[in-house]
Amino acid sequence: MNKHVLVRGVVVFLMAVIALLATSCDPQAKWTTKDVTVDIDVFTVSAGYVECSFRPSDDAYYFIACEPARPGFDPLDPKNQKQFMTLALDSAEVEYIAWRHYLLKEGEFTIAPFASHCLQYGAIDHFFTSLEPNTAYWIYAFVVDPEKGEPVGKLFLKSVTTTQHSIVDVHYEYRVQGLWDYIYPLNPDGKINNHFPYLASIVDSLTLAEDLDHISPEEYFDDYFLTISKVDPASNIRYGVQVVKNDGMNSYVEFEEGHTYYTAIVSYDGFIGNNVIYKFTWTGEDFAATFTDEDSIVSDGEDD
Image (cartoon, rainbow, N blue to C red; front, side, top):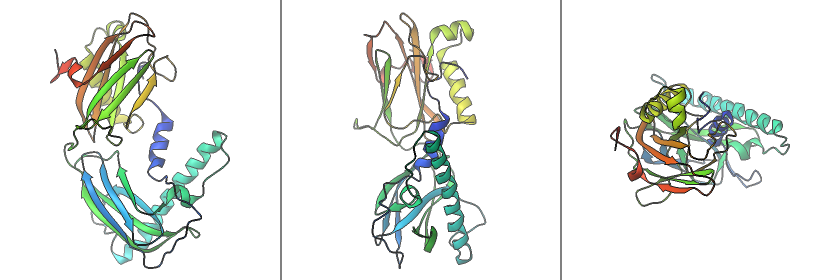
């Protein structure tokens, strides 16, 4: 992988998967499993993510998930429910153990119990991300006995199909301050969108000229983003405000005085779109610049 790749990280992938399961549950909270129902409401269905809410009828621990629908299988069939819920908890247990081992390697010996790490408690709003466009999914929940680690009662499920194209309007602000750069994904009202997925990368113009035989920034980024979207998008996807120090560490680019750089940001709401490329010449640690979509050097794929 080119040393100038901005986004990186096996740890990012692991934590992104585990984030689906992580909660702030109090393992000592009061709870019941008797006749508890969980209402699921879906607010936003886009190409790459779904926004929804879960509202239990009483104080209870419960599990939530989103997974591709399986043709020919009905998880709501009474014959299938118990097995479906048990296997879902098994999958959560695998992720939980992976998380514990990760913390152990990092020297962290205080481990949250399964219930507080993998189960929900109380009403929540949730985003399921990194989904595929035009794909059917099951969003579901069920009550869990936190002491036994077993499903209780019925399965509650909603079927959704992601859209072919993004329905979310997000634009970007990019700022460079000395060695640091900042990406702000913004809604039309200017508020930060913490749930819209995007990709970003930066390259030195000398790399394009010397190492890549004078290919254009558009060609470079088109090839790069297409490659990672096919190979490993999950470990590169970003959410919310991102801040990077461009000092050559951790596979990030190293800003050098007098060098010209290109930074590209693309939406990845299930597919690549909304491409912007910013060009600037870095003049030292007092360099400062702010860019919006209007400052992109590409418009419909062509240089301005």
